[in-house]
Image (tube, rainbow, N blue to C red; front, side, top):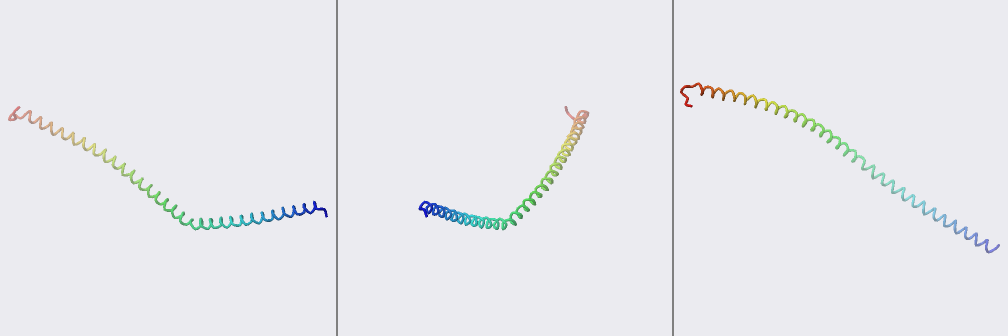
Length: 116
């Protein structure tokens, strides 16, 4: 055999060994990453019930906030109605007070014993 042919065969053999080593290392890396991914998925699955509980609690609080907002809106409407009634009652009271005052003034004007 020619020495060149031997060197070509050795070079091919070295390349094949290097490719085999690279494939082995790459396969090991992929297996390690798969394991890490599976572990992360298991941890995430363990946290799923907690997340669901917190989401349910958030929905409950949101519903309570909506109920409270509706109550506050009704209370605000009630307060506005009461303020309107109070203004009307105040106006009526002032009108009545004016009538009473006018009556006193008129009585004083016609009373002969009242000094002017």
